[in-house]
Image 1 (cartoon, rainbow, N blue to C red):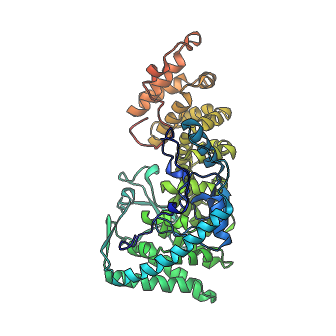
Image 2: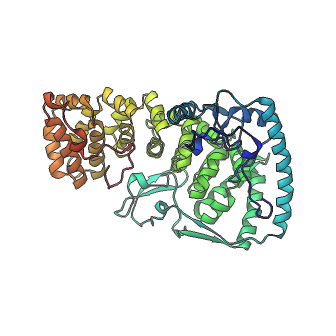
Image 3: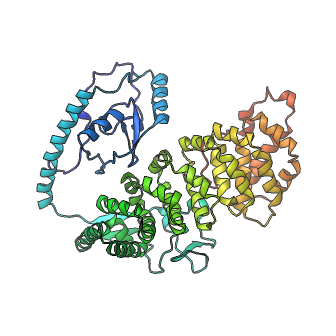
Length: 519
């Protein structure tokens, strides 16, 4: 480690006997505790979103020690939630591969001794790093945005009013489909905001933002409410237009201060804090950092019980954070799904829109699909097909239909009739993506399902399928033809039918990404 300043993993602190030669399959990274480097016996999710061995968390909390992880972040151990889904996955992996299943949690005294050694080593590394930083030159940093954030905004927009500022979503041909939108409706950018794909920072800017970050962090925690409010308003304005500021100011210290503002009993402080968090979350490099800071639990509390405007911004923040692949499971575990489902009935169009898209991104993960089924989400989503949320809701339904649990729930709630009714009511000139995604959802439900066949025939869908096949896109026509083939099969010949050959492998996808390449 000496000379490179990097944080190393702590797996050397925990020793185990060599694995038998027969066990050669390497476990998934998610199965390994990032502190011990060992397969987890009792995985738990902490407030910052990471998963650890429960015994290690217990010891770290007792010793009041927070380790620095390999990526430089520090976990928040204030809340611990058992990760039962991961526990089952580890057990199943051990059975299927023949690997040794952990029979018990690590010995408490052994873990405590190891953590104490880790504490000692950490103090040494901090001193060493300070010495190295004193002579290190600061290199130029280039930060790259997500490609989907680079869509230039046109002067033609659909405007939705917010109580404090304009909120914009583009409504022009070069606008990405809903699945690729990355900015919440509660956010609006200034025409002067940069759309460059790179942000280049020099030493002068770094020094400026370091000082600014320190000032913000101090003032946001001020006991003077007026000073705190003015500081969070300034932070909101600055991060709304300055992309460099979003990256430079998103530090653990500032996020901790912002977290305290989220729980403020003063509405103005809370509202502007959530809005500032939305702005910070727009940068791809910030999304994982924000979730790991432990800010999601208080954000969910604001979403459930905050003011009208605070709830709008909280929905936007959850949507923005859910885009990051590594955040999806943590946000679901931390309890965002129930309030997001409830928010689909909100009086605010901004809240409904961003909540629906957050559910779309979160439902790309199987563990969240299972949670949504258990929450009876299907009964909430299907009636919304006849509302202005249809475009967003059908995306969530497609994700659910791609899983066995979701497919069963959809069939139980007569989704076949609801989706075909939507196709009947939609005219040829209506939103093409909604019609297309309804067909895709029906196609997913039809794959290998005898129940679909009976439900579709009862709904008398033949004429609807003919109309869709004649007027739809090439992708829609392909899916429609396959469904019609399934429905035309004679009942007495179904058991011997080679479905794989008939469908040409079209059932291989496990989740719906909403792109134009099909399945």
